[in-house]
Image (tube, rainbow, N blue to C red; front, side, top):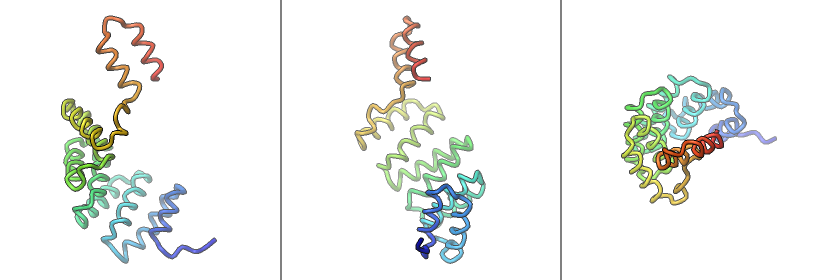
Length: 171
């Protein structure tokens, strides 16, 4: 087996194998040499997230945002961390910063919709969903079975039994 000399490539291969702690060790070495390496910082956030070291993941994501404010990745990762912690206002600010740098980012738009729903901003979530579908038509109609069942229920509230069947199929 060939020896990998590129620490980012080595860490990436470890990540693909689920060896988060080993990858983080390699990334610490890479970041000691180049503290603002955007790829190493982003990979470190992912490693720390997987290791459930959320405070460290947040600190590294903040470092990524400071060192590369025009890179949407740092903002996106920070939004994910905040959403995981239930900090929907902070998550919303972070995903908005991400979308400011890349307005057509599909994953960021999906995350924005999730945050808007968590904040009970239903009309904003629908508008963002329509925008997402205009940016990426493959996202159109990708509602889950549960979402379709809920729409069916709203349209057919008087007919409870068929709706129950639809919900049971969704489970």
